Image (cartoon, rainbow, N blue to C red; front, top):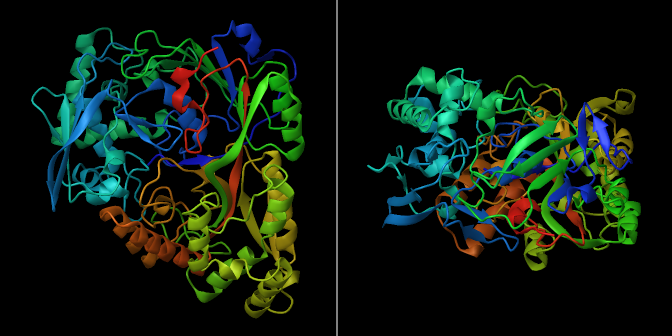
Length: 620
């Protein structure tokens, strides 16, 4: 559920030592007396809730990550690290058809508005991930055609949803929640509940716009949530669903923002956000170190959205920025190498660029979309194949990626990245990617021309097919688009732009026929890339419906497999995707991280959240 869409792009940087925008001063890093970290975040914030549909953006995760703790976090070695300060979990039943895990919140913890944290705060996870609960509570069937459930969550149809049995049980002291699964599912540790300030949600649904005046008021709201949850009170839950789905989707935070939206238990709290420009987090003295690791000297983190990759070297050189990771051009990388006082950390990310073609409306509204790639007919499939065959992937990698990472290659798998050399070679040898790599680009384009002539007539070039294209407007993405547009014009497609900064909000928008963006991976799991591919997943917004993909992914989610069996299923999924020409990989991201040499403790990770995963270790 936490796989993030990565969009590394930004607006132009003002080159002054400080900028004043909309009355907000963003100070340069050197003026922060070495307790502030200023870091770039190439996409602007779109929501404080990255689990809502179309809000699963890396920026949204990064900005909110320091404001909360749960049972575990991921380190830079792709390990799951238990957060014993928050609580613990253990298997309490391990039978073939009854696998139960108890999650216990440690006593004495509080949300930063003073409300006690209890097991009740874990129950919202079930609402967000169980289709059975959503249906039983009258909140809508997430799998039904044309239905948007009251909680418009990305959690439905995932591993949890497919395997959970019944509702969670709460202990008498309200500190432990026990979940029952059909069996011991693979990677079960990653599918447990996370904490949410349910009292704040309950208060906002009641129209409150101020923090509770007492612990008694917040406790009463928590008890009300428990009652609504247990009794499945539809009206109350729908009111909270509207808040959860929409009210957190903000990009500006100031004195007029409802403070209940900002309640957390992390080391930091959101102090302010200026749309398209920056978000500032300040140390939360009420909760710093109470639910997780304590910070070691940093009391402010500023996320800058207005620093373009081409401007990052100057910003780092001027000490306006302390920490940068992005999609720089070769010229920008050379400039970064010349900047004094920074450390440059190269290396690939577990993030991949891809292009996806829409076949139907998002979700289960299969009939509405009627664009050039719509449907599962032979003509629609062939049209998609022609489009993907003509993509100049090698040219794009040579011109835009190898200039940054010399050993970069065209990506031909979504389940295995090229840096896993032997596994990647085995995967692409079996996954039916061959037709899209065979021969030269000229021969593949000629094949695409033959397809278009067959289905659209000899004069097909006189009647170009418009392909409305969604992408983020940074330098590298614009370079990609320019290459794609020219190549596709030669086989009768007119790709439209321009790129837009808030692209991620439009992934479900039927007006777009194709989109290219990146997926950023979290901890490795047996289901691999399935959450982005199955027809029932909220993460899959292009209307694909393929029985082989769905059935194979369901099997991957339901039972632990040997590596051999897992790999065989990964191949089966990718073969189906390639044969239907739904989507194709472009390249694994080359990671370029630049760090102020005075800033210690930064350990870039290849998985999300790439930089902020250990912010508590940062210090000057």
